[in-house]
Image 1 (cartoon, one colour):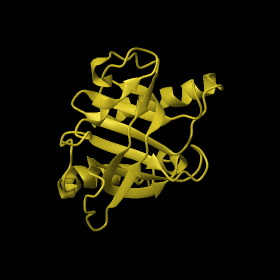
Image 2 (cartoon, rainbow, N blue to C red; image 1 turned 120 degrees about the vertical axis):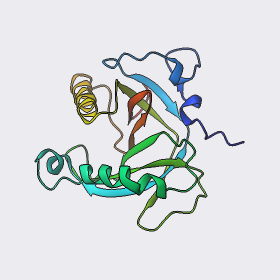
Image 3 (spheres, one colour; image 1 turned 90 degrees about the vertical axis):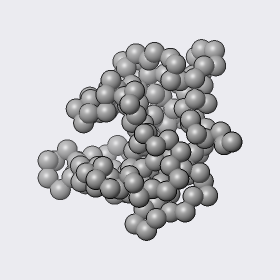
Length: 184
């Protein structure tokens, strides 16, 4: 049996004894440091910027979610966690002001065949700050991202890596994982 079926069951919080992340209560205003093992996501993708998405016109993320929820999710073969959706942010041009790729998909085995018009993204093991959102609603996710930006604005000792960040959406709500540089 693979160690990937419950990716976050093997996530270990660094500031406490090893326990599954899903069994910990996380204060959304206080992110937790976590080591996440490598995993692979297959899904549909777009390249965009935060400026485009916040402009109210020509945004690409809303249509991507719409396409994904109306048939795109079913097109992903071999999903490990059927009810969990990942929104992976990667290939950053620079930082949060530059262009980035967003892959909306599901976790799969690394050798899984990739359907046409989709992309496989291997996410390496890394250290993350984890921010929680009560639900996966668009408003809750926007509010959680605002907490991410505010956190880094007020904690200059913590630096984003701008490698692979991801949202994990499940029936338990959503979590945002931000890759960080160095040690906390």
